[in-house]
Image: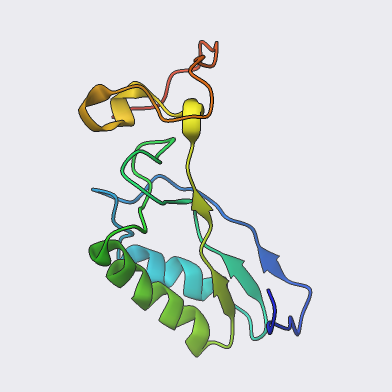
Length: 125
């Protein structure tokens, strides 16, 4: 965070609300982030996938296509207009992802080929 100074010790941690459709951050997030912005406050955007193999949950945004970047710009602008600082949380869920979220149902990309043993199922609606 070189060159970034926080004027206040106020940080909004990333909150993944599962409200991004087709991997695109939606317009309603402009209001969401601007309502939580204070001058000098620091907001961390929701987890944004770095590739089509990155999602760990359904309805999360991406950041690897121009369409994704353009969708994020109004949210970042709204935070900046109120004097806030915005960072995007980049993520790749790795083996914690579900086959259903992967292109063509392929196994999730990970540094290990062993799946996570879990009975947890993702909320697909």
